[in-house]
Each structure stands twice: as structure tokens, then as C-alpha cells.
Length: 221
Image (tube, rainbow, N blue to C red; front, side, top):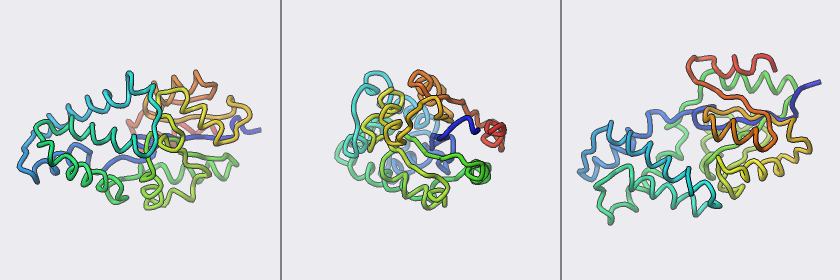
């Protein structure tokens, strides 16, 4: 008997990664307006902004498509310090669309073989991510849509990780009668592992330190 009915994967950092890194795109958007922020400063600002707008008090706030756009607009403002306020909307729109293009993402080499093997084993597979409707376009462009049975997106579920309500809503969408038979795999220890376990799921932490990290982590399944 299989140990799980569902195996659920985070998206960014687990199945795929922006290529090039997001800070490069942010810096380029600023430079088009004459704002020359050093790349390292953009990296630092972006990391800080992500934590500010996804964690802490923000983790307790419900979300939807409109909220996600507003959240990312604030992240753009904080990452590109010095950006004129009257240009924020234009830069945000550019970056929002930029990260919707599949060509600006790279799927990790071990993802497709791992998903195909797990499907042959009889597992049902899902993606559960802090994202919005753009994720479906990205996954389709990387030919991953047909490899999974469900795509669970925070803007649809109404909550984002690390809020436990994310996992409650995801459990309902999966129609998982037994939470202990759902396995979450992700690269963010707290949101993908700790909170998933607190919500009754099993979870494994993926560390992308080698090319076959995902296939190695799931080799026993």
C-alpha cells in the first residue's frame, strides 16, 4: 500500500526557479528609468520586502487575486528604493508580466522524471504555492500541467503560507479525508514543512544543493 494518497509540491525553489534571478529583472526595470541601484542592494531589499509582506502580521491576512497584485506592488516599491512614485505602476506592470512568461523560469532537471515516476507508482500529485493565476501559464509553458492532478494557488485558496488556513483550504480542495496521507515537499522549512506538519500533513524539506535533490528526497516512494 502506498504511504500517501497525495504528494504535494511547492513551486518556486522546489519545481522551478526564476532565470535569471529576480533581482536582475528588478535592477533592469529600474535602470530603464535611470535608477541605478547596485545588484547586491536590490537582492538585499527584495529579500527584506518578501519577508515583510509575506510573513509576520501579513501571514494572518486573507488573500485573493487583487490582494496579490497589491502585495507585489509593495514589494516592487520596497525593492527599488528611490523609484519615483508616479512610475511605480508602470514598473510594477512590467515586472508582473515579466514573471508570467514561462521563458523567464527554469524547471529543475530532476522534476519531470520524478513526477513521471511518482505518477507511475499511482500517487496523485499537486502543486500548492503562494502564487496567483500566472502560475498556471508558467507550468503549462514548462509542460508540467499534465504531470499533476491539481494546482492549488494561494490567491484561489484565500490564504498564503505560512498561515495554517492555507493547508486547511488545500485539504478541502484535495478532498483528502485523511490528512496524514498527504505529503508536502518544499524548500521553505517553516511554511512548507513545520506548518504543514502542524496541519496534520506529512512533510519533507527539500534542499536544492545537488542536481538530483528532489529525486533523492523521494527515492523511497
